[in-house]
Image 1 (cartoon, rainbow, N blue to C red):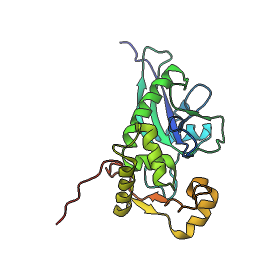
Image 2 (image 1 turned 30 degrees about the vertical axis):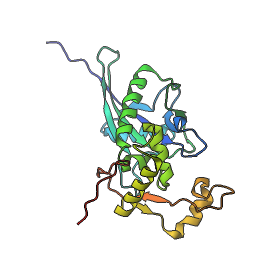
Image 3 (image 1 turned 60 degrees about the vertical axis):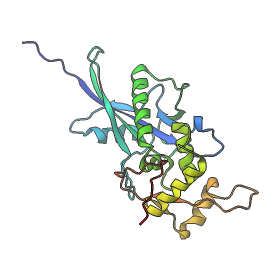
Image 4 (image 1 turned 90 degrees about the vertical axis):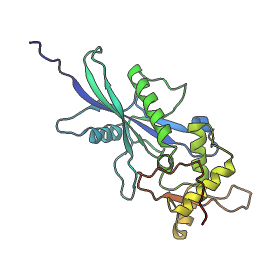
Length: 242
C-alpha cells in the first residue's frame, strides 16, 4: 500500500491598512503589508494554532495584529486554504486577512498600495485577490469598515473607505452621512468623550477644522458593536411610525 505523501503546514496573512489622509487619492489609500515580493508567511510550529501563527508571522514582518484590549471586533479572518499537491514540496497554507493602522513598521515589511501595480509571487497574488474580495464584503458592514480606520475615526473616514473599496456610496454623500447619524443614534457609533477631543485633535490633522476655514471640527467616533451585527453602512432602513 502506497504511503501518503506528507505535507508541510504553513500560514500566510494579508494585513490591510488604510491611509485616511484626505490628500491621498482613494485609489491609493488601501495598503497591504508585504515582505520583499510576498505576503507575511511562515511554517506552523509544533502545537501552534493557525490563528496564533498568523499573528506571529505578521509580528515578525513588523505589524501587531493580535487582540487588543478594548477592541470588540475580530482583527483576523480566515480567507481560505491553499493546497496544491502538484507543487513540490507540497505545503498546505491557511490564509488569513487582518486590518491594522498604517504606521511605522518595526520589521522587514513595507506598506504597498493594493491595485494593478502590486507585484507579488503567484501564490501570494491568488491569496491577495481572495483577501481583498473578503475585505470588500466585510467592509459593507459598519464593523468591517471601522476596522480599517483605527480606534477613532470620522464619518468622512468611513466615506473614504467606501469610495476606495466600492467606488462610492449607494446614493449621494449626503445620504451616506445621514446613515452615519442613524448609526450614531443607534449606539453602534459612539461619540468620543469631550475630555479626549483636545488631545486627539492635537495629534491628528484631519480631526481638526480644515486650515483657514474656521468651521466646526468633525465629530469623532468609536465603533461600539460586537462585530456580529449586520448593519449595512450605506443602505437606509425604512423607519416604521406608530
